[in-house]
Structure formats: C-alpha cells, structure tokens
Image (cartoon, rainbow over all chains, first blue to last red; front, side):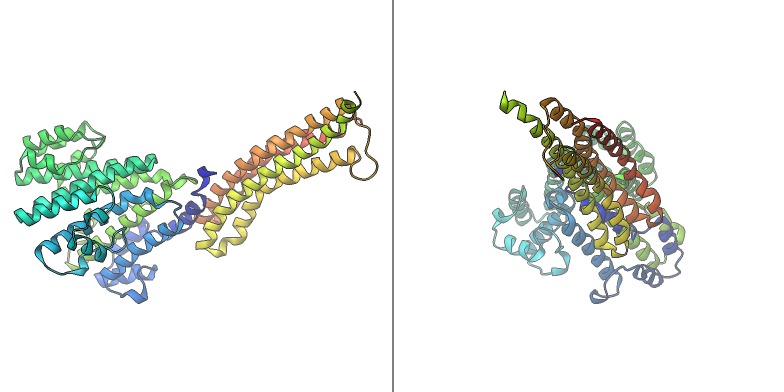
Length: 323
Length: 161
C-alpha cells in the first residue's frame, strides 16, 4: 500500500492546480496599466487574505504561507520537502548570526514557516546552544559565528552558511529516496555553483574563494567550473555546453538575469511530466515549485510596474508557467 | 477412504470462498485507492462529489462478480436451498478450478482498476467537462473482470453434480 500513500495528496493537488496562474493570466497582468491594478487582478483570483493586509508584500507572503499550509496538510512525510525548506532555514541561521554579532534587532528579516522559526533561531544563537540545531547546522553555526565575531567579514560568514545549505540540500535530496527530489536538489546545487562562478569571475575572486563557496554535486564538476571561471566568462559558457545545462550557455552570454530565467524555465519544464503522475510525491513537489515560480513572477511584474519598467522589459524577466 | 470421499464438498465450498474472497479483496483495495483520490478532490471542490463517487465505485463490481459465482456455487452444491448434494472429490476440485478465474482476475483487476480510477479522478479534478472520457479508462479494465466472470459462470454451470 505504501506505493499509493500519495493518492489523496495528489488528487487534492490536482484540484488545486486549476487555480494556478496560466500564461494567459500572466499576459493579463502584464497588460495592466499600474501595479495597483495588477495587484487587484491577482487578489480577485483569490490571492492574499483580507485579514493579512492588501499591500503587495503581505499578499505575496500570505500566498507562500498558503502553499506550505496545503503541503503540510496533505503530505504523509514532510522530510522529503527538506530540500525546499532548507534555504529558509539557513537564511534564518544567517540572519540570526548577523543580528547577534552586530547586536541589532530586526524581527522582519526571518522566515517563520520553517523548522526553526526566527525567534527560536535567535534564542539558540544568542545562548550559543548550537547543538539544538538540526543536521549539519551546529558546526556551521559555530563556524560562521566565530568567523563573523573574529574577522567581522560578513561575506565569509555568508559563504560558510550558503555552502552548508547547499550541501544539506544535496544530502536531503539523496536521502529522500525519490528521484525527482534528488534531481531537483542536484540542479539547485549545480545552478548555485554556476552563479557563484559567474559572480566570482565578475568580481575577480580567487580559486580558493570559489572552492570554499561551491558545493559538490553530480551534474557539475566544480574543479572544472572553477578553472573555467578563472579563464573567463566565455569559458564558463563553453564548459556549460558540455554539461546538461548546455541550453543555459547562450542565456549566460546574454545576461545573468536571462540565465536565471532560463534556470527557472528549465526547472518548470522538467516538472511538467508530473502533471500525469497519480501516485508519487512528484506532483506535490511540482506544485510547490510552480507556486513559488508564479509568486516570483507576480512579484517581478508588480515591482516592475511600480518602478515604471516598460512592458517589454518586464516580459523579458517573466517565467514560464506550470499549467 | 471414507473421509477422502467426503472432501468433495469441502473443495466445492473452497471454490465459492475463493471467488468471493479474492474478488472482494480486489474491489475493497480498488475502491479504497479510488476513495483516497476522491477525498482529495472533494476536500478542495465539494461540487465534484457526484462525479468522483461514480468513478470511485467502478472497481466495486469485481466483488459483485465474485459474489455471483459464489452464490451459484452454493446453490449448485445444495448448501443454499435444500440438502447438501453428494459431491465427489473430482467434482469438488472441478468446481474449485471453475471459481479460480473470477477470484484471481477479480483481485488483480480490482487493484488495477482502483489505480486507474484514481488517475481518472485526477482528470475530473482538472477538467470536469471530460468526465465521460475519464470514466472510460477505468471501465476498460472491467472487460477482463467480465471475461473471467463469464468463464467461471459457464464452468460452474456446466459441471454436473
């Protein structure tokens, strides 16, 4: 029977997929004259919550929360979604370490819908009870905390935590035992590595720096990527052509934002077959990512319109939709 | 020798049990799987209740086919309506063999039909107007349960007690 444990969840997700934004809805949003009008359009589709406010940030935050509420409600085993909650968890760790070290106080920078919410994370870091943290976090937290305290180098602390996050995501993907989640984790790590390579190239970082920031994964060889990054941007694109990210090479030559867009579209494209799955965790993962993707797209459209970008400029950054 | 010759009726009853038991289990599992999917859809959209209920019930027929063959077998050997017939070992085994198709095919097709029904409920969830097509896919599996019923029915009927 374990093969059918996702039957209920998938059927429920199927019913929810009908309310995902389609490419047509995105077109409609793009053609709105102002950000307010676009925000009203998504709210008419049921986005946000009257209780949580009608401004852009609260509507989008509420939508993210809703997605996780649904998944928590239907998933028989939440541990397979670690790959998606880890970025938030490690963000909280980073924010807490910085807050404690710089003795500032800003509760708005934390995520609360993850295994260790902001308040608890802050308390753990403040009391240096690192062992209360899950997975590889105790060592990471101790290391990042010491680094920031002794060197006052925020970037060093960032890369320590970011790398630990990538390694944790990769591990969680392998541990989940679900191919689709392992693939997702692998792609996430690979794309993060590629972005590190591109940015390091632009800012002239050393091979050691890249080595300390990149995490190992199956689809990218980090040593080759580092060598390419040291040689030049064109070499990074050339290296990608020999990997499964070949399509991204052209996008990378164009601009970093078009590469990011290509990454998101590739992910959505790889998830589309999940629409025809009825008994596995795949459709749940696809729904979660599709929701994150559409929230990101709506955010891009709204901020684009707020800042007076032309429709064309926004369209360039808009992602493909799942449905 | 005496005990052995009386085993005929036991085999025949075992046949009826196999038909009802396996086909019933198949339907129970199938309806259960489809029911989970149906619950998922109704949680989000109660308006689709009637449509998904019909699809959920499709894997339920195997149990009825098993019941039918079990019923015929019981009346054939006289456990139902009248005195118990004198069933030889050979006849008992023949009846047991005759009951196997509906039992085994009922079990396997019930489970498969349940999975197909769950997938079909996914169609109804996303495209309610395609209900007719969605119903056809699980109905296809039914064919093989009916074929098994036919053979079991003919065989049980044809055996002279």
